[in-house]
Length: 146
Image (cartoon, rainbow, N blue to C red; front, side, top):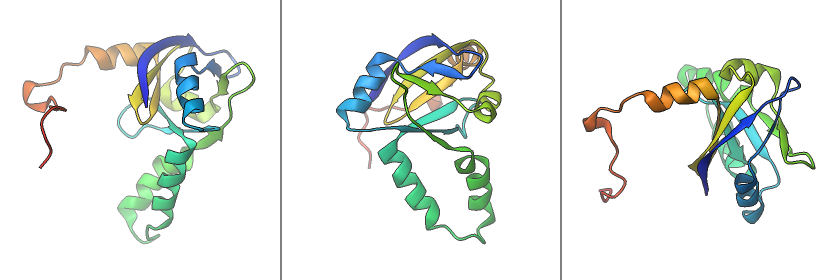
């Protein structure tokens, strides 16, 4: 599980350090690499551990090529994915197309979201955090699911 918010930078080549706590969580789970892909809910990047990515690709492989709605999502999000390894310094190379999608400039924010990680441009992250959630839309995680 991944938790926490970490401010970092991204260099001109598209390299950014995966925070040590997130690297440690990956290592503890025996996850050798991550997959980066467009986030369907915001202009950010999802970073999925290899096992989660593998599960997602298995699901995608069972879809019909004639299911237009599913195939559009596959094209927009799954087809954008890149499997990446961390270098010896714990850095990740974010491909140019994904950097453009998320608007990653210099300052970035890594956010642990439980089973996955998100990577935001700092300004986009701050705008997302400033958005109010209507009281009726707040999810009660303590409430038992029926």
